[in-house]
Amino acid sequence: MGLWLQKWGLGGCLFFIFAHMLTVNGQSVDAAGKTVAEYLAEAGYNTVRIAVERNEEIVPKTKYAETVLADGDVVEVVNFVGGG
Amino acid sequence: MEPFAGTPSREEMLAALEKRQGVEAVRKLQAATVAVCGLGGLGSNIAISLARAGVGKLILVDFDCVDVTNLHRQQYKACQVGLPKPEALLANLKEIAPYTEFETHFEKVTEENAAGLLAKADVVCEAFDNAEAKAMLVNAVLETMPEKFLVAASGMAGFDSGNEIATRKVTKRFYVCGDGKSDVNDGIGLIAPRVMLCAAHQALTVIRLVLGLE
Image 1 (cartoon, each protein chain N blue to C red):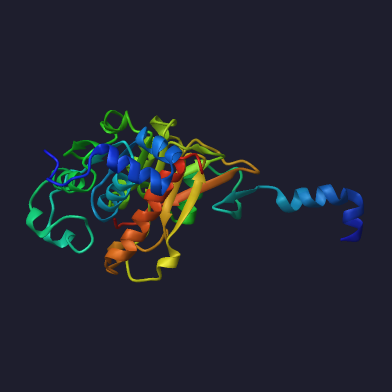
Image 2: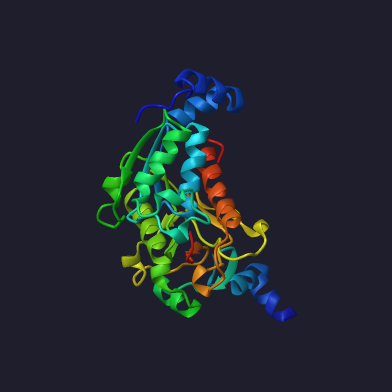
């Protein structure tokens, strides 16, 4: 570890730790490079009951399959349950 | 409909509101138009709170009629069972706030008609009971009406503590009230005060948005 740190420095170490990380509903998630559709399926969301915001912008449902999540994205998935 | 005998004048009601809420707040609220989509346990309570607070115009939308199973938590009377909800709520609201401007629509909100129904609203309240309808409206407003504020609700069923009902700011223009998880379809029921807490969170958020406090 000492040698490794010497070679790559702290920046490289942090890059290694935080690569592919983004935030979903306040939690760090390793999902960069995945599409919104892939992430939602893996996380078990029912896509007809949610709204997805990425970096303060709505992700239209028709764009879930083509929107690729990137390092540092801030994503909010709002899940609706019944009752009113 | 004529005001009832003994109803205070518009000026008297405005002066009373200003005394309680402040002149500037009342001026801003009077200038606001708020749409309430769904007039059940959430929407009927939201509409009454906003009318009492002096919101100038309310757009009220629901496709349903008052059912006996609504009476335990929705602001209707037993004698109104069978009436379209917009018509019944309008009658009740006019008794409470006779000088508020109301627009009612007895129809289902869809992706196609949402922009037309909500065109004049500064703030939209999502107050449906069906999760898929909630998501549909929220996506439609956020995708096609980015200039509007949106206050939605998710999770107010069951008998858990009211302290779990909260307002979450998702983005600058989008707020969600509720506990985020209690689903009426899990057979946990709905009880008036818990639904009213969520409705109160929504109504207060609307008022805070109109007053520029959010």
